[in-house]
Image (cartoon, rainbow over all chains, first blue to last red; front, top):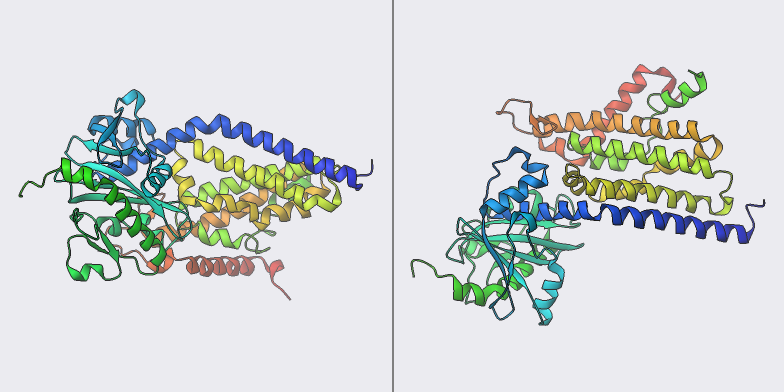
Length: 248
Length: 203
């Protein structure tokens, strides 16, 4: 057969593409459940890292079951709120069927454009509440989890992650422990503007809501600062109404 | 064993090592050698991808239209890489490593070793030798990766596979963590290999 004829070449390449697509679609379908389980466990890890819940199980790092167990043991309740700050749903915290709002992109869209939002609040037994934040970095989405003390304005801890920020620069939001540790003890200025200030030399002002941006990662820092403010704003009503600072 | 087959397996590991002799796949060897664990997963992934892609391309070698052969090869390589990535994402223990290696797993597609071996070997040889050639090249690549990662993790973090080796008072050398140091180490390995094997020295 003449393998160099036009007809042969076209049919051959078409066939190769169809076969490869079929193989990929099949594998993706088969592996989806375990990939989702891994992603869920990863979300829980990040949330609990922010909430300062230290693993007791040594399998925690690699085994999903340990992560789910730790979450189920420590969570008090989880619920969602709408843009009006009112509670509009409950998330199951039962070990067998833990529910999370882990698709943050549609929520982010809802915050910006208005509409139906289900913004999650995870309240742990220690009194710490965790909320997500989501926004755009330089190359792709960045997101994170911010844990609040029972007073609803002091940050207890934070965890940030990203899809494709530059290693060594923007990726520091995730890789460098010192960066996320800076957030602990800071206070979100609910009721005033800006809610949170992540910028160059911001800490010099001594304000409780200021954290220095990362040198060399201007766009990632800017994106993160915006993500924090947009999401804090969305939670502002709820936090102001439902959490009272003890000393006031 | 058939001496020709033995040559196929041993050559890529020493005399024809893809990194130190052919100088292919340098980019990823700088990027993923900060820790042994990542280097090991990368080594295994590249070995599987080169082996399987060479096997499939060798099986198809008489049917591939010459004019589009590079495209067909690329599709086969991409298929293997995506499969490896999907499987790593699905494993409980490998998910974190996949996230850590992030783009570099996907970039195996552009690793010159894979396409290089298909063009140079698999298209002109039977499936079994092609599979072995691909695997051996992956092993040759992985070997260098692991040597580099050994030194970088030991002196850059004081650990091996995440376990503390050097005493707690050791101050990690930050230069070792940075990619340029991998280049320095690679240079040293190439130097050592050429000093030991005179055949490799240019006249």
